[in-house]
Amino acid sequence: MEPQLAMVNIFPDPAEVRTFALEHGFHGVEWSFKLQDLPETPARQSEWVRCIEGLRPLDVRYHCPFFKVDLGHDDPARAEEAGDIFRRIVRLISKAGGGVLSIHIGLGRNSMEPLSWGATLDNLRGLVQYGADRRVRVCVENLAWGWTSRPNLFEKIIRMSRAGVTFDLGHAFSCRAVKSGEFSVEDFLTPHPERLTGAHIYHEEIEGTGHLPPQSLEDISSRLDLLCRLGCPWWNLELHNPDELIQTLDIVRGYLAGRSCRREMTSPDAF
Image (cartoon, rainbow, N blue to C red; front, top):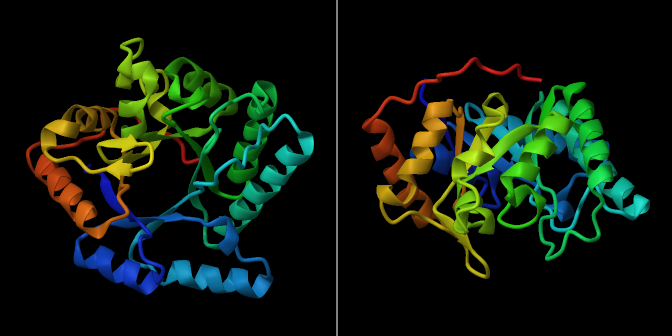
C-alpha cells in the first residue's frame, strides 16, 4: 500500500487548492487552521463544512500551527483557553465527518518554562479522549525545539496521552538531539510505530527562512525509507511555495517509483 500524498492549503481560495491538488495528482489536503479565521457562528460553521466537502474527492486532514496556544500552560486560565480552542476545532472537524488533527506542544516558544509537564499530559490525554468520542484522532507533532524535540520525552508524551504521532521529517533532521548524535531520527518512531498516523515531508527547517525543500533524493531518502518501513499512510509535502512543492513532489514520486512502500505492521485502530 503506497502512502497518500497530500499538500497544505497553500492558496486562500479552497477551489484553487482543489484544482491545483487534482491537476498534480495529490490524494489529499492537510488543512491548516488560522486562529483568526475560525468560524464562530453556526452559520459560519456550516459554511466551513461545505467548503471542506467541496474539496472532494480529496481526503482531508487537519493541522493547528498555533503559536503559544498550549494545553499545558502553568496558568490554568491560559490552559483552559487553549483547551476551549482545540475542543471547538474537534467539534468542527466532527461536523465535517471526523478525521485526523495534528497539534503542537510549545510551538513558537523559546522556553518551556511557562508550561507544566503534568498539566500538559493531563490536558492532552483529555483532548485525545474528547476527540476519540467525536471520531477525531488527535496527534502530536515533533518540533525542532522543546520537549517534543527530544525522542525520550516525545515517547513519554505519546505513551501517556495515547495520542497519535505526526512525524515531521524536517524538525527531526534539525533538532539538537539528533544533530548532537545523542539520538537518531528513528528514535522518534521506534518506541510507538503503531501510533504513526502521518508525516510532514520536506528537507529541513531554518529559523527565519522556514521549510526548505530537498534538492535531491539523497537529502531525504533515509527518512523516507523509515516511513516506508513503518507503513506511514499519509505524506504531507509541507512546502508553501508552489514551485518548491512540485520540486519535492517530483523527488518523492521518483522515490516511490523505485521501491514499493508496503505496510509492515498491523494497522492501528483509528481511535
